Length: 181
View (cartoon, rainbow, N blue to C red):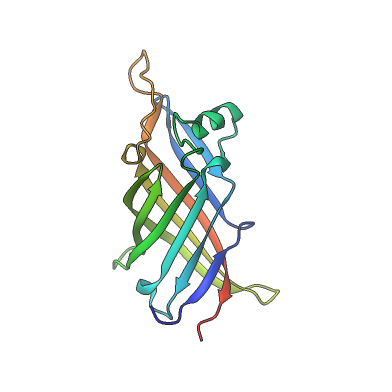
């Protein structure tokens, strides 16, 4: 990468949500309140871009404090020993037709696994205060078992309390931190 432009996530305008199956037909929805990241762009060649995202796992919020405490506990995230998750991009593919795919590694709960993230929309504007902004909507799906997150309970009627597939959707808004020379 030559002289990249650096972009910082705007925490006030960025949102990270997740959902997973709960008790066969229901769904748990939640978000992380503290997270951020950087994007480095190398000119117009999107395939040379790089991203790094961090998530404060203690900031999980499902709207139910008791459930959030259990998610933070050693039964699940174990935030005392693993306080953050970090995604680092390695490659960007531009399939035709299709949306850009960002391949990278996710460090979560002491495990490091490859993850692919789809960029479903992208926009760049200069706001009324003359601040350059980029927005991205992204989505991915991960299998929590690959990260050692295996807590579950069998139900008397069949099935389990929570599903293994976690859908992650983010709206990222970033501001230009440094222009390329």
